[in-house]
Amino acid sequence: MSLNNLMPSREKAENILLWANEKNPGLWIGHCKATAIAAETIALKGGLDPEKAYILGLLHDIGYHGYENGKGTTCHIYFGYDLMMEKGYETVAKICLTHSFPAVQDINTYSGFDMYCSNDEKAFISSFLLETIYDDYDKLIQLCDCLGTPHGITTIEKRNVEGVMRKGFNVNTLKNWTSYFEQKDYFDEKCGINIYNLFYDEIKSSIFGSQVFSSVTTP
Image (tube, rainbow, N blue to C red; front, side):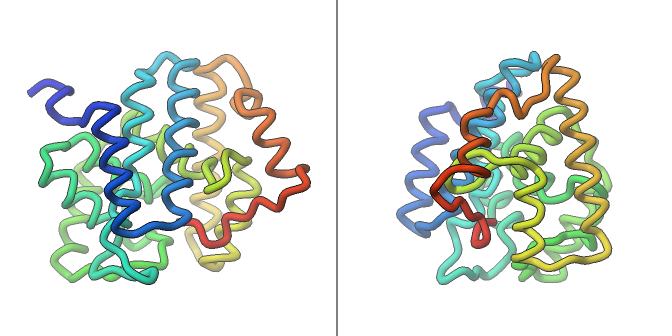
């Protein structure tokens, strides 16, 4: 099966996100758009497929479509996987699961606040992670998930601190932080530039601008 059959087109992906916004509007939509832009930009500079990177970034959190008042009947990573597999988009479905596990491919390290999965769903996710080999797109979306806010792109440092403000500090926090910085080093080398320079104006605004950019309520 070709890659084109495993992913939606750019236009289709954007329409899926529009549909999701109608079902569950919120800051997560802006986060997905920023993640997509960051992924596309880094991919273009680093020799990956920018179109693929954009689509994966745009739909990595699509599982939030099934939420209402901040809660769903299962965790967003499984919601997203299930939806994308139903549509035949296996490549996107993979990203829906892997983006939340940057350091250790173990469901017990999940740092989300929405682990509503059934035992069967948890067992599936655990098995999936153990059998999955991360590629550059898994790593890229994990990194860009940490760069994207509802208001644009920021630094790993700022996003990580805001993440702890939302979710608290646990035994896996430092492992995840270390992984994000390792991913940044990896893509810095691939791009031949400190990737923060690709988003200089946005990062400058997010840290020093007059508007307060907060992702405290962002996935």
